[in-house]
Image (cartoon, rainbow over the protein chains, first blue to last red):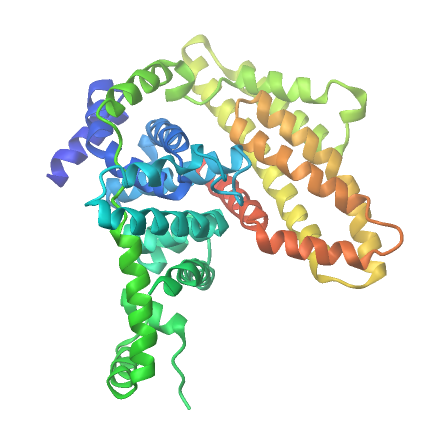
Length: 186
Length: 257
């Protein structure tokens, strides 16, 4: 499987668009997930994924195979997501009050398990929205990479160009912010 | 007394960044202390709530839409090769054309880029044109990257001084430095934009108002703006972005060497 991917990468780096399309289709969903979690916005996530693949294509020859191709792509995607947020001046005000920024989380709750859980889910959704909005882009990214992507602190530090200590602190702050609103529900 | 903080418990939850001894200590403490168990359970519950949100998934048409947008961009010549050295030279030339823009760093960039391009052009026989162009292209990019990286290092220093120093003398000097960086920042943003590096250009444009405000602090109280800046830097990741962009440019420069 990995060798297969190495072959696709080699072909794509020679300019084979079909090979690159194969790589795009293999990794697009995973990149979308990480970008959507960081940006909290469908449109920004899609733009970030597109930029990530575009940048990856431009730099394919620089991919040296020391890390897995997916790891390399994820790093590019995380930075593309942060860049998208920065471009739209949303680094701090990550999610707006209005409906647009709430799309993702709203979508996540489109099929609630039942009426009795609906109110709780909506409440929880609002709580998490609020806390996500209060996180800085770096806190969100560090938390997403640690919690959802299962990356080690060392990898997070490399991806975000931070020290390990700064990565830890970003995660601690993110968890504190989430707990601040989630704990009182207990 | 070895206390266990909530941050330790977060690391314990992820089993990350704790050595075996510390893990064992926390495990024993959890067995021994009910209040610690409750604190840990609270963290676990918060994490479980986050996990309860379904993962965001792209819609069914996403791949088709993505490829439709991506494919034309991949076919553009600039995608595979770097921008032509003519483009970069033109960008640098345009950058320096207004007289007010002709300050020392810009002149150095132009002189180097033009010199390298001219040298490569003179040396290149028709069959060597592509090689010479690539060399000149890489050299021009390297020069620009190096200058912008140095500019960002200076900017980082100004931000740190402005946010950490309470010395009026230092702040006055820093204000002058910030004023000199405003113009340079504008030039580099222009150069980056004209060389096709919109990402860098956008970032530099974002820095400009910060530098302008540092160059023009309140006369009545030069200390208070420092506090404001400290808060601003603390609440945004501007410093991180400055360092990350600088590191990226350094890496890009090293890679081109």
